[in-house]
Length: 163
Image (tube, rainbow, N blue to C red; front, side):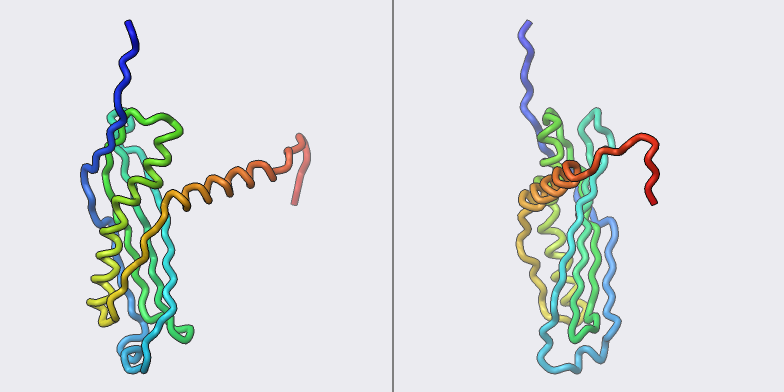
């Protein structure tokens, strides 16, 4: 009997806010400064884990930190963990990490962008729109760094002690 090929499936089961925080340590004095033009630093990290790998359920969390500073003072800090449950079935071993670190975060990003904008505005600051993110490029960069690290690791010698 010929082996039946099944198409990969990608389903978004649930999107939820796992954790969120907003801090404005310099308020209200920060609002009295003229020409508010903070330096914005955005840090993104992706975490994923199998919930039920046999049935294709995975949790993906997009950790986002936005730090707005002005004259070395923190105007505000936003920290968001936007999460989702995804059902990924019939993906190869090579395809699954790409789905978990590229496709799934792409689905979560619009929710993060909305939350960041909403929190900044509710904190009394101007609207903040995060730029689009190329998760494919980030994934490729991460893989390139791993390959370089693996290639540059010296062969360990048995019995050798390093301090």
